Amino acid sequence: MCKVHQTYLSGVETGKRNPSLLVLERIANALNVDAEELFRRRRR
Image (cartoon, rainbow, N blue to C red; front, side, top):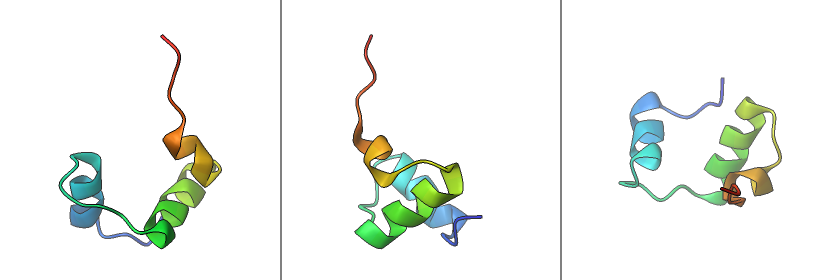
């Protein structure tokens, strides 16, 4: 659980909301990754 309301999280996923650093940290913790992983581009 990342302590972020699912409606807010949906807005982040669809690009309708801009998350704060705190929210990004919460999401990263819920995914068991470092916050910097959320910004890495995947190689094709």
